[in-house]
Each structure stands twice: as structure tokens, then as C-alpha cells.
Amino acid sequence: MSNRPTTAPHETSFIPPGADRCGRCGKAVYAAEKRVGGGGIWHKTCFNCATCHKMLESGVECAADNEVFCKTCYGRKYGPKGVGFGGGAGCLSAE
Image 1 (cartoon, rainbow, N blue to C red):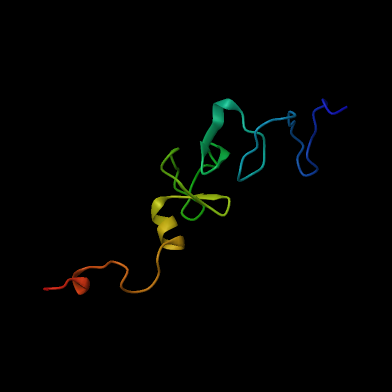
Image 2 (cartoon, rainbow, N blue to C red):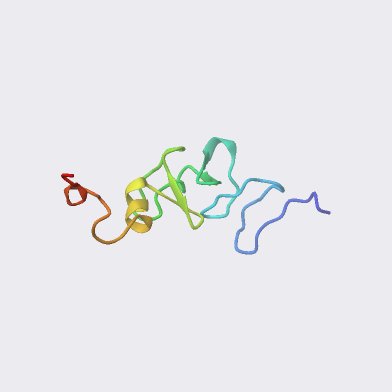
């Protein structure tokens, strides 16, 4: 009976066995709407920044904690914090 299609308890839609599942919503992803990136498979509409919801392209996203982010939001959330990380003129030496 393992070849029979199943439905998740919270869904009423058909889920084929062995289907790829979206990293954000958990529903089946078909080839026409499939986006690969951030270590997972996503629907085209689910493949957006988790913070600002900007649509992303494969290869341009940043991934962390099973979510995808645009580079700007990723830098804000996971980048260096505080003062002095830029280096800048304060690190220059005349010697």
C-alpha cells in the first residue's frame, strides 16, 4: 500500500508519493513552478526573501535557518554588528 497517494492531515490536495516539497509551504512542487536554491526546492511564489519578500533568482539568494534571503536582508540579519568592521581610514598607518 506504500504506492498509494497520500494527503497530509492539514491539506485536502493530492500529494504524489516521492514528490519534491517546497521548503517554505511544504506542498508538492511540480516542474513548471520549481526553483532550486538555498539548499532546497521552492515554488516560484515561495522563493522570495523571508524578510522583505522580494522575489529572488536562483544563485543570487543567501540561505540560513532553512530560509532564503536577499543579500541586503541577509547582511542585516547575519552580518557583522557594531562599529569598526569597515576598516577604513582609522586603520591606516603612515609608517
